[in-house]
Length: 369
Image (cartoon, rainbow, N blue to C red; front, side):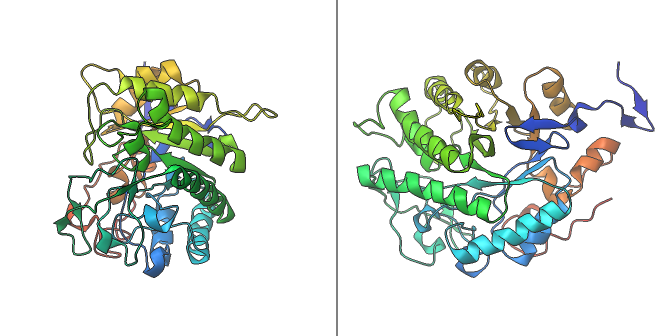
């Protein structure tokens, strides 16, 4: 039976506290990572970005926009980095603003791999991928006009070791900036997903071929970051069956089963602490219960995502399908989304023409209740 008090649901599962690894959240509403293209010169987070995240700090957890761990990890216009001292200082201001409001924030680390329009970078850097196969999808250039991606070169053994190290340093840099942890972007056709997917991975070494081999690169990075900052401050995001950026959607279960089982074995031998969470974009596949697959192969917390409404999110929590739920675009126009969900207030729709342009317009000018 559902009880209401002036339209407010009592014992609402969205507002029960939860612990994800080392992260204690005041509620189970997570702000999903969203590219917004507002970084300043040198890919440095700006005061405007600090204000944007501060406004949304009532989420139980904020996952930042995808942030490149190295110069060659950048593929899009004005996305922030975490590899320079100036970037670390910029992110420190973001973390301070969120923490001042009582919020928690982790950084999504995103290496674009082959999904690169070189003009978006503003500097020269290699374009790398598991195999020398161009992404055939178009990506917006600096003027917003879709453009062809660059031709990548296949990563060699030295590249793999170097990139693993870059992710580890990025995790350390995020913690130095005061963020509460990191999330490894293993979804949406970017570098980690490129290793997982046969459409972009034709390698014949120990990082290609079988599902276990294709999952090995992601597992190496997760283990390295966990060793450096603690497993309980490391999460990962997956989207089995997502066609974005040229991925093959056929039969995603074997490789993601291998990845989840490998991630589940990453543990601190002294504290027995494991990874913080798996963040799942459920594509609603007809032939795969994605959340069921994750629950069967991963013993830790799950954050569920993809076009959730308040009641469908509550149902996932009450049905033990997930420990937390994430919302993306609903947070754009509703910086106080948790309060609106709590009181059943109407949700505003964002101005979609200002998702990636406009500076403060369509970014920090949406009003709270």
